[in-house]
Length: 112
Length: 113
Image (cartoon, rainbow over all chains, first blue to last red; front, side, top):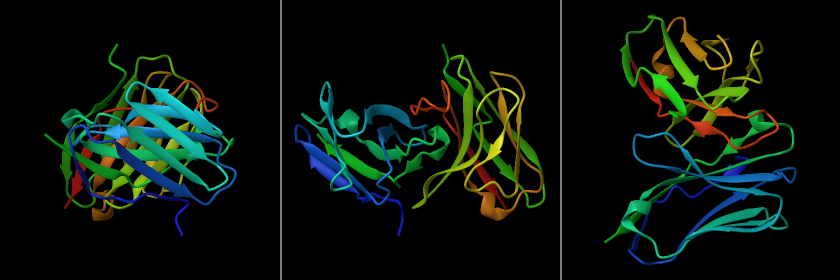
């Protein structure tokens, strides 16, 4: 079993929809949680960073961490075609950034 | 402010050839990382450098070597390329190992035939 599981999709939604992207994990020591956006043939771009549990909001993006369920989510409101990309979750225990574990990514397409 | 830059963008090698992938960052970060990205596998850490003068193995170091040339530059060398090393390689950096936000370069697409 992988430490981090992420549905690879693809996920296709109409413009303006609310998108929910999710990851589950097995390591209860994970404390640091990130979401990256990766456009086709580009490098991952840090989108959201959360420490421990709770919610974090940045514009149209909301990250949620539920440590009791070992489940993290990224919500995109009022989705735009420019949001079409692969979204990677990443997480780590407190042992240092070299221990970051990535999900395999969910490919998202927003249709105009 | 270019962030993290990588050269080359693309490379095709024959089995047994060697090459060096170059990475540089201008964010004054102490820690740097090399990852490979393969379909269905996510990003996997090859080597990292906590600070100038130090390097350590990651999850998949076999077949690779690294050099932390100075604070800005971190190179990855394939001494004898194998088809299993066909992948997309990303360099990343962070302020220190205690800061978990990593910033990635644009990647190098390597094909080994």
